[in-house]
Length: 90
Image (cartoon, rainbow, N blue to C red; front, side):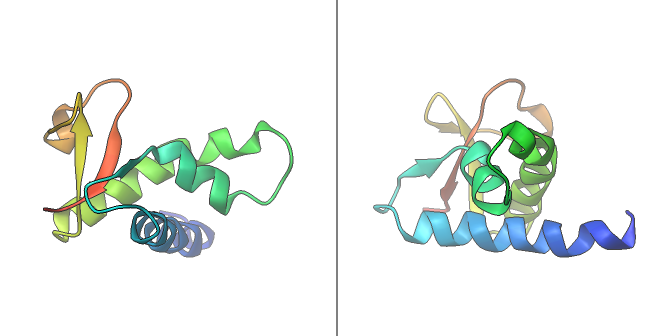
């Protein structure tokens, strides 16, 4: 990973947790919520942060902080295809 990406990766992790802390227990967020919160422009540049946001969520899954869901059910991050949601572990 290039050196300059690391702060953004850590910021995405923090933002995911902060967004979840602001929601009701069991509520979910979309990785795009984190990407939009971290992106500092007014255009669609946040889309470039979607894959880094997904990777940040996967690291948080590995750390036992969150789970990735599809259809309201937890899924293995490596097996998730298509739209996912993120929530705090129950």
